[in-house]
Image 1: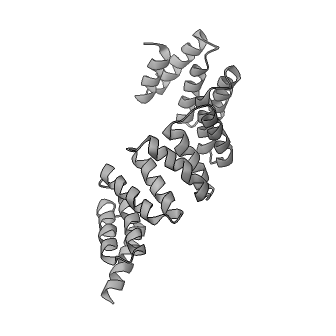
Image 2: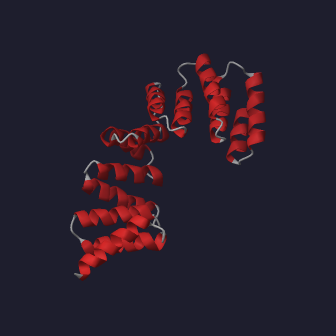
Image 3: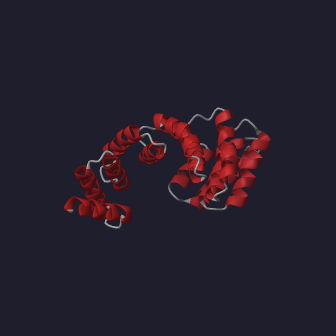
Length: 219
Protein backbone atom coordinates (compact mmCIF):
# COMPACT_ATOMS: atom_id res chain seq x y z
CA UNK A 1 0.00 0.00 0.00
CA UNK A 2 1.39 3.42 -0.90
CA UNK A 3 2.25 6.05 1.69
CA UNK A 4 -0.71 8.30 0.87
CA UNK A 5 -3.19 5.47 1.52
CA UNK A 6 -1.35 4.49 4.70
CA UNK A 7 -1.38 8.13 5.81
CA UNK A 8 -5.14 8.39 5.26
CA UNK A 9 -5.65 5.20 7.29
CA UNK A 10 -3.51 6.57 10.13
CA UNK A 11 -5.49 9.82 10.01
CA UNK A 12 -8.79 7.92 10.21
CA UNK A 13 -7.41 6.07 13.25
CA UNK A 14 -6.48 9.44 14.86
CA UNK A 15 -2.72 8.69 14.63
CA UNK A 16 -1.98 12.19 13.40
CA UNK A 17 1.77 12.19 13.94
CA UNK A 18 2.18 8.97 11.97
CA UNK A 19 -0.10 10.35 9.22
CA UNK A 20 1.99 13.55 9.02
CA UNK A 21 5.18 11.47 8.74
CA UNK A 22 3.76 9.38 5.88
CA UNK A 23 2.41 12.41 4.00
CA UNK A 24 5.78 14.16 4.35
CA UNK A 25 7.57 11.10 2.93
CA UNK A 26 5.04 10.91 0.07
CA UNK A 27 5.65 14.61 -0.77
CA UNK A 28 9.46 14.13 -0.61
CA UNK A 29 9.23 11.17 -2.99
CA UNK A 30 6.78 12.89 -5.40
CA UNK A 31 7.06 16.67 -4.98
CA UNK A 32 5.05 17.28 -8.16
CA UNK A 33 2.05 15.21 -7.04
CA UNK A 34 -0.67 17.54 -5.65
CA UNK A 35 -2.41 14.70 -3.77
CA UNK A 36 0.28 14.61 -1.06
CA UNK A 37 -0.19 18.31 -0.35
CA UNK A 38 -4.00 17.96 -0.37
CA UNK A 39 -3.91 15.10 2.14
CA UNK A 40 -1.50 17.00 4.39
CA UNK A 41 -3.79 20.05 4.11
CA UNK A 42 -6.77 17.92 5.19
CA UNK A 43 -4.77 16.65 8.17
CA UNK A 44 -3.79 20.19 9.21
CA UNK A 45 -7.41 21.39 8.87
CA UNK A 46 -8.47 18.50 11.09
CA UNK A 47 -5.89 19.67 13.65
CA UNK A 48 -7.17 23.30 13.41
CA UNK A 49 -3.83 24.47 11.96
CA UNK A 50 -5.57 26.58 9.33
CA UNK A 51 -2.65 28.80 8.34
CA UNK A 52 -0.42 25.87 7.36
CA UNK A 53 -3.35 23.98 5.80
CA UNK A 54 -4.02 26.94 3.51
CA UNK A 55 -0.37 26.90 2.38
CA UNK A 56 -0.53 23.18 1.51
CA UNK A 57 -3.74 23.54 -0.53
CA UNK A 58 -2.30 26.59 -2.31
CA UNK A 59 0.83 24.59 -3.16
CA UNK A 60 -1.33 21.77 -4.57
CA UNK A 61 -3.10 24.30 -6.81
CA UNK A 62 0.22 25.73 -8.00
CA UNK A 63 1.05 22.22 -9.23
CA UNK A 64 -2.42 21.50 -10.65
CA UNK A 65 -5.01 24.27 -10.87
CA UNK A 66 -7.63 21.70 -11.91
CA UNK A 67 -7.43 19.84 -8.55
CA UNK A 68 -11.04 20.13 -7.36
CA UNK A 69 -10.30 18.56 -3.97
CA UNK A 70 -7.73 21.30 -3.24
CA UNK A 71 -10.40 23.99 -3.73
CA UNK A 72 -12.71 21.94 -1.51
CA UNK A 73 -9.97 21.72 1.14
CA UNK A 74 -9.41 25.48 1.01
CA UNK A 75 -13.17 25.98 1.34
CA UNK A 76 -13.14 23.92 4.54
CA UNK A 77 -10.23 25.98 5.92
CA UNK A 78 -12.23 29.19 5.45
CA UNK A 79 -15.51 27.62 6.60
CA UNK A 80 -13.97 26.50 9.90
CA UNK A 81 -12.84 30.09 10.46
CA UNK A 82 -16.36 31.35 9.66
CA UNK A 83 -15.13 33.14 6.51
CA UNK A 84 -18.23 32.01 4.65
CA UNK A 85 -17.93 34.18 1.53
CA UNK A 86 -14.35 33.00 0.91
CA UNK A 87 -15.39 29.40 1.60
CA UNK A 88 -18.25 29.77 -0.86
CA UNK A 89 -15.89 30.88 -3.66
CA UNK A 90 -13.69 27.82 -3.14
CA UNK A 91 -16.59 25.34 -3.01
CA UNK A 92 -17.99 26.82 -6.24
CA UNK A 93 -14.57 26.43 -7.88
CA UNK A 94 -14.38 22.80 -6.67
CA UNK A 95 -17.74 22.06 -8.34
CA UNK A 96 -16.68 23.94 -11.48
CA UNK A 97 -13.56 21.74 -11.63
CA UNK A 98 -15.75 18.64 -11.65
CA UNK A 99 -16.10 17.71 -7.96
CA UNK A 100 -19.72 16.54 -7.87
CA UNK A 101 -19.88 14.97 -4.40
CA UNK A 102 -22.43 15.32 -1.62
CA UNK A 103 -19.97 16.96 0.80
CA UNK A 104 -19.03 19.87 -1.45
CA UNK A 105 -22.67 20.67 -2.30
CA UNK A 106 -23.60 20.35 1.38
CA UNK A 107 -20.79 22.64 2.55
CA UNK A 108 -21.65 25.21 -0.12
CA UNK A 109 -25.28 25.11 0.98
CA UNK A 110 -24.20 25.62 4.60
CA UNK A 111 -22.16 28.74 3.70
CA UNK A 112 -25.40 30.29 2.41
CA UNK A 113 -27.32 29.13 5.52
CA UNK A 114 -24.79 30.87 7.78
CA UNK A 115 -25.26 34.07 5.77
CA UNK A 116 -29.07 33.64 5.96
CA UNK A 117 -29.49 33.20 2.20
CA UNK A 118 -31.86 30.26 2.61
CA UNK A 119 -33.18 30.44 -0.98
CA UNK A 120 -29.65 30.20 -2.41
CA UNK A 121 -28.81 27.29 -0.10
CA UNK A 122 -31.73 25.14 -1.23
CA UNK A 123 -30.50 23.81 -4.63
CA UNK A 124 -27.12 22.80 -3.16
CA UNK A 125 -28.67 21.03 -0.17
CA UNK A 126 -31.10 19.32 -2.55
CA UNK A 127 -28.17 18.07 -4.67
CA UNK A 128 -26.34 16.87 -1.56
CA UNK A 129 -29.45 15.02 -0.38
CA UNK A 130 -29.77 13.30 -3.78
CA UNK A 131 -26.13 12.23 -3.76
CA UNK A 132 -26.22 11.03 -0.14
CA UNK A 133 -29.76 9.90 0.74
CA UNK A 134 -28.65 8.09 3.91
CA UNK A 135 -26.57 10.89 5.46
CA UNK A 136 -28.58 12.06 8.48
CA UNK A 137 -26.95 15.51 8.78
CA UNK A 138 -27.41 16.29 5.10
CA UNK A 139 -31.05 15.14 5.09
CA UNK A 140 -31.83 17.08 8.27
CA UNK A 141 -30.30 20.35 7.02
CA UNK A 142 -32.11 19.94 3.70
CA UNK A 143 -35.42 19.42 5.53
CA UNK A 144 -34.76 22.47 7.70
CA UNK A 145 -33.95 24.58 4.65
CA UNK A 146 -37.18 23.48 2.95
CA UNK A 147 -39.11 24.59 6.04
CA UNK A 148 -37.27 27.94 6.10
CA UNK A 149 -38.29 28.41 2.45
CA UNK A 150 -41.93 27.73 3.33
CA UNK A 151 -42.05 24.34 1.61
CA UNK A 152 -43.76 22.69 4.55
CA UNK A 153 -45.09 19.50 2.88
CA UNK A 154 -41.66 18.62 1.45
CA UNK A 155 -39.99 19.51 4.76
CA UNK A 156 -42.33 17.09 6.56
CA UNK A 157 -41.46 14.27 4.13
CA UNK A 158 -37.73 14.84 4.57
CA UNK A 159 -37.98 15.02 8.40
CA UNK A 160 -39.87 11.71 8.38
CA UNK A 161 -37.07 10.29 6.23
CA UNK A 162 -34.56 11.53 8.85
CA UNK A 163 -36.47 9.58 11.52
CA UNK A 164 -36.33 6.45 9.34
CA UNK A 165 -32.54 6.86 9.26
CA UNK A 166 -32.24 7.76 12.95
CA UNK A 167 -35.26 7.08 15.15
CA UNK A 168 -33.82 9.03 18.08
CA UNK A 169 -33.33 12.35 16.28
CA UNK A 170 -34.71 14.93 18.73
CA UNK A 171 -34.43 17.88 16.32
CA UNK A 172 -36.38 16.03 13.61
CA UNK A 173 -39.15 15.30 16.15
CA UNK A 174 -39.15 18.95 17.23
CA UNK A 175 -39.43 20.17 13.63
CA UNK A 176 -42.21 17.69 12.86
CA UNK A 177 -43.98 19.10 15.92
CA UNK A 178 -43.69 22.59 14.45
CA UNK A 179 -45.06 21.30 11.12
CA UNK A 180 -48.00 19.68 12.94
CA UNK A 181 -48.75 23.01 14.67
CA UNK A 182 -48.59 24.71 11.28
CA UNK A 183 -51.27 22.23 10.15
CA UNK A 184 -53.25 22.91 13.36
CA UNK A 185 -52.82 19.36 14.64
CA UNK A 186 -52.00 20.10 18.29
CA UNK A 187 -52.18 16.47 19.46
CA UNK A 188 -49.66 15.29 16.86
CA UNK A 189 -47.44 18.27 17.67
CA UNK A 190 -47.54 17.34 21.37
CA UNK A 191 -46.51 13.75 20.53
CA UNK A 192 -43.46 14.97 18.60
CA UNK A 193 -42.40 17.50 21.25
CA UNK A 194 -42.74 14.77 23.91
CA UNK A 195 -40.61 12.37 21.85
CA UNK A 196 -37.99 15.09 21.29
CA UNK A 197 -37.74 15.52 25.07
CA UNK A 198 -37.59 11.75 25.68
CA UNK A 199 -34.54 11.62 23.38
CA UNK A 200 -33.00 14.85 24.71
CA UNK A 201 -34.40 16.13 28.03
CA UNK A 202 -32.29 19.31 27.55
CA UNK A 203 -34.15 20.30 24.35
CA UNK A 204 -35.25 23.79 25.43
CA UNK A 205 -37.26 24.60 22.28
CA UNK A 206 -39.23 21.36 22.54
CA UNK A 207 -39.85 21.93 26.27
CA UNK A 208 -41.13 25.46 25.62
CA UNK A 209 -43.33 24.36 22.70
CA UNK A 210 -44.72 21.39 24.68
CA UNK A 211 -45.65 23.68 27.58
CA UNK A 212 -47.46 26.08 25.26
CA UNK A 213 -49.39 23.31 23.46
CA UNK A 214 -50.42 21.70 26.78
CA UNK A 215 -51.62 25.08 28.05
CA UNK A 216 -53.64 25.68 24.87
CA UNK A 217 -55.20 22.18 25.04
CA UNK A 218 -56.19 22.68 28.68
CA UNK A 219 -57.91 26.02 28.06
